[in-house]
Image 1 (cartoon, rainbow, N blue to C red):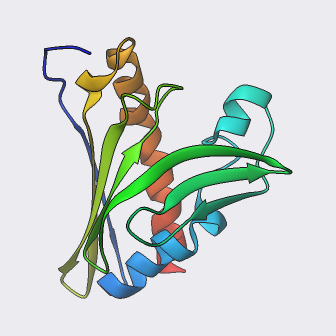
Image 2: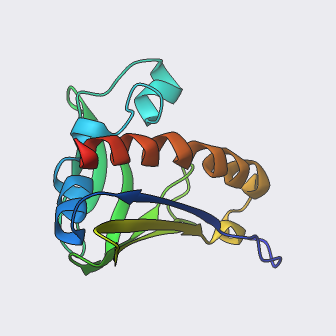
Length: 153
């Protein structure tokens, strides 16, 4: 664990739907839009696509990918405030003792919704924090792009 604070990753996208609709697409339809072919543990470790991605929509719920009988855990819901925000303990490596934190908020803006993502807590990682942060800084862009396309469809 580093004693140096590492800047959080900030990303946002604006969609042409209400916060309730945006929240619903993000959480309840995540398997339909998440780029599992490139942004999953199966893709990184086995060069394959998982069967599905599950977001258990409740405080204490899990986010995980499923491939056959194999389950890869991504995170746990620590804050659940639909349709305004949720926070996840997010596993960026194999060390659950040091999860990062992802907060996603849904704010009315004009006739749509601004969805803001903050990925923080990089200093909790025992090693590789700058590299993981750089990877997620770039990696969240296509994820939110795909979400935006799905929400606006």
